[in-house]
Amino acid sequence: MGHRLALDPGASALQALASHCGAARVAYNWAVRHVLASWSQRAAEETYGVPEAERVPWRSWSLPSLRKAFNEAKHTDPFLREWWAQNSKEAYNTGLSNAAAAFDNYAKSRRGERKGARMGRPRFKSKRKAPPACKFTTGTIRLDDRRHVVLPRLGRIRLHEDVQPLADAIAEGGMRIVSVTVRFERGRWFAVLQTEERNTIAPATRPGTAVGIDLGVKTLLVMADSAGEVREVANPKYYDQALTQLRKASRTLSRRRGPDRRTGQPPSHRWEKANAVRNRMHHRVANLRENHLHQATARIPAEYGTVVVEDLNVKGMAGNRRLSRRISDAAFGELRRQLTYKTQRHGGRLIVADRWMPSSKTCSRCGVVKAKLPLGVRVFECDACGLVLDRDANAGHNLAALAAAGGETGTGVAGDPGPTLVVVPKPRGAKQKTRTARTRKGTGTRAAGATPRQGTETRDRRQDTMREQLALW
Image (cartoon, helix red, strand yellow):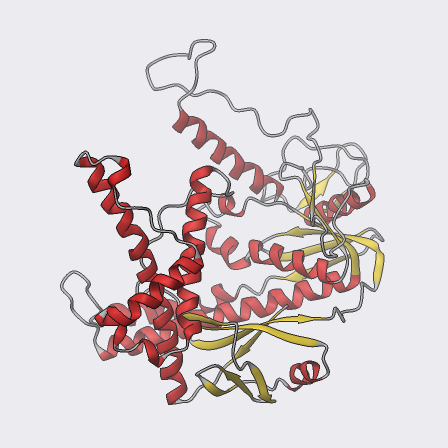
């Protein structure tokens, strides 16, 4: 389990933290340069006609190989030799392990063994863009008292909050610190403790009750349980509340002399101050949003034994230029992630409804599916049985009914397969909308059996996905 603790470091601690994180970045860039140099040399020798057996050998990117090569180079490289002893070995190990993982992910992506978008070659980390981070796995790692943490080479650093309950759990033997990662994010330094501990969280208070959760922008969560109760969680829209101040801060920043990478012009002090003011506003919005999501998602698995959520195409929904800002502010993806691990932590079940399930257009009483239900229509009216209900509450009842349909789900224990996707077919057995083939202007109808253009088919699929998600939501 992870515990994120905010730090209040002094001047010397700030310098040491920045030095260790910079050392991790330098080690990562050194490892990338070390491996890619052999690749470039072999490519050049191939163009010269050098036989395969006589070319420069491949350099391994495994962590032991990179460690051995770095330990040899730090005594001979003039750049590394001057300052490598100022930081802990864990800082350099962080960069080397990240580089080894990056090359492994690239190789697996090339072989088709890695899910997701195809990855490119590892690139160098920029001092200006890369988030500072460093991981400690060995050495002295402990909570000194209720307000300090002790890390290797960094020493004793003050914490922003009281961690006496955490220190007591470690002292009693119910928790053990495995590693600590220090990172700088949202204008603060944090220490993230990765621990092994006993599961002391009580199970759900209503283990036999299922709840269906419908996500939205106007109302963040509409929960309808199997007992017939409907509750809502409002969407505070923190970004919209701060939008006026953010626009004013952005206008002020635009009138200052900022950095120019083309000419090498450094930013003015007034630009740096204005940029810090604007960044603090963004950080505050992010912190408020995160706090609200944690509070909302903590209560649901603690009460219900079965949680049913939608499998929304958030990326496709955010492509709507009229709703993209509010959809991003609602953070549907983060809410789904928190529900997943918190449900497993409480020993509950999580059901993920199929993406094409018409939860909003299906009557929760008789099961009749409407042909169309525009997003502007907020009340569901069934033409068959006469049910009149809020569309989000109707969708919640349909989602909660999936738990009674016999879907097998994970239990949250170790080795469990996790959330199971329950596929609910559409009325006519179709998995998605039927797309009509489009033709180029002036070419007439496409001949039977002709293959549509790849770009047109992909664009049609993306547009249909966005329309379907907006209709369901």
